[in-house]
Amino acid sequence: MAAIRYMSKILRMTIDRFAEMNRNSVDIKVGKIIRQWVLNIYGADYVLLDKHSNLWFLIKQYLQLLPDDYRPIEDRSEYISFFLLVNGEETTAHQDHLGRIIQLNMLYRCYIPEEGQVRIRRYLENQFRHAFIVFMTARQGDESGEKITRSIADFLLTVGVDVDRQLLGRLMKYWYRWRVKTDKKPVVQIFF
Image (tube, rainbow, N blue to C red; front, side, top):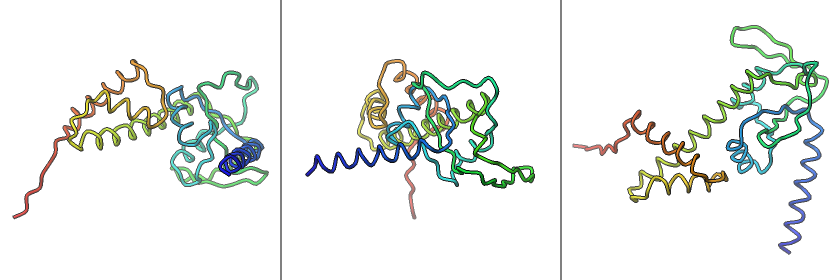
């Protein structure tokens, strides 16, 4: 019985994958760590965004027509795909921060230049760091006396990222700098 449920889940995922492949998508180079994190969260290297999310607004801001010298990506080991929310010939109007009305047709705008890719990658890296800080604050705040290296390794295993010395060192340095910058000390309120 469990094998049948497992096979139906795989079949459903495959059908969903083929349905999503017919949509327009944009590829963003995010690096191996963020890609592994996204793979752990979404279960695939393609993401369908909520239309009210900050990431969708950021992607929408940089969408352009394909350049003439565009070539499909061969090595996708550091890329993830974001599916565009509007698929078809309909044009949607959006108001930018200056109050201008911009007409967008997502059918033809499916490319993000290098500047946009850098901004999106930074946004995802900040989300990863935020998840790291929340995890470490909860882990270190429970007064268990656990070593910081062990907590960082647990975080990486929890979010599905491969653990290596270089990454442990970078995250440890980030954690120490964040603690010094915020000067987090436990505060006990006293009521009279």
